[in-house]
Length: 144
Image (tube, rainbow, N blue to C red; front, side):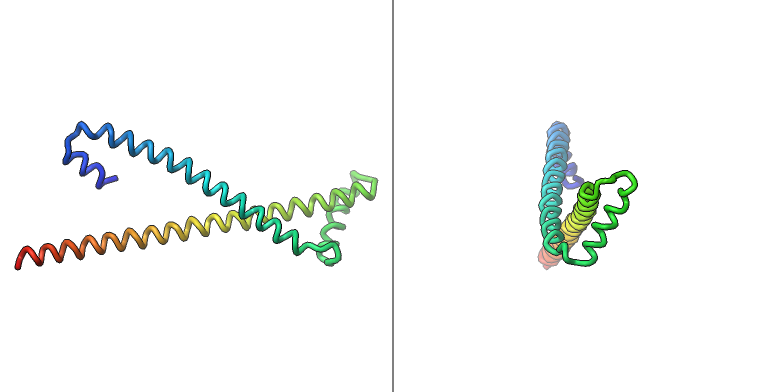
């Protein structure tokens, strides 16, 4: 932004409006595109994690059976039909699985954003270092 404003003032203040409009437009489009990409990535990861979690959930597993019975017992006071209680227990287990898959997906999104931020910082530091080295080399060449 600072570099852009510096160049605008070098070319004249009549370019200021164009620069502000262009900057505002790129921020708006970038925000929408970033939100869409991260939302899509989160949805894809949530489905992948849900599939992986469901793959490991076997009815013969004692922990899964205990969770199903616990969910059924939680609604036993309001539901008298044993089939409905079992279905409600399974629904509660499914909701827990979906919630866990979404948490794992958000972790993936935050990890991706963090990696992107670190890579961007490294790239910017590289450019600053390169610019400084070139300036020193040009200054040393001009003095010779």
